[in-house]
Image (tube, rainbow, N blue to C red; front, top):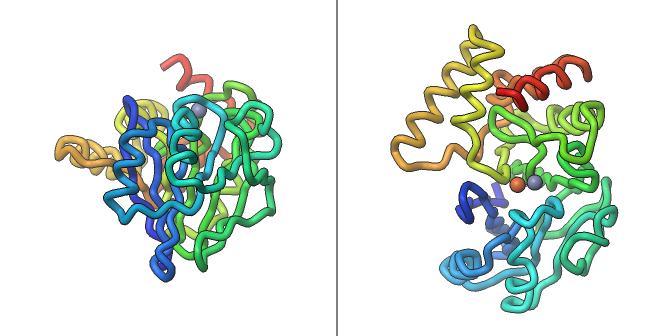
Length: 241
Ligand code: ZN
Ligand code: FE
């Protein structure tokens, strides 16, 4: 494993992610929405920042970007499709592009659905997925700008990543997602186990994230939806839950 991912809890229930290439010490921060705790976390980790990665334009993922960039003088990477509404990008990317973090290469995956220009980053050297507000543990992002069809295709791209991929998402939503998931899939043993695990993690004051992709494939009702209609149905139920 050459890429490590450490959660930086910010705002109410958001996670920024500190990525480090163990071979070179190169470091990136994903979705730095609150500059002060993020700068402190980076300083505590050695004070090096090579790159800022943005998954999407929402303020709870981007708000601290300019301050963090000014502090560490590093480039900001985000979706070309949303360059007009993201903080000023130094590197605009799209699906199929790669971003180098030291010796590790991150792959850009377009994952529209929650927002039109949402992107995820996948580092095979983890393997680590930065899933933003596309895939949560036991959930997925609300369809604010996109369609169920787009989200279905986006989740399908994530489902085929290596099963041991660590899913580093943008929010600590797992417990409330588990309550909903159990309402639609009450007999799923993997879901019951993951729900109990998350409850124990929260009771101990720990993060439930990252989760492991294989656990999500077994327990996440959005990832398990077999077609667009099934995903639209479960997303609608969650929105009314
Ligand atoms: Zn969002
Ligand atoms: Fe968010």
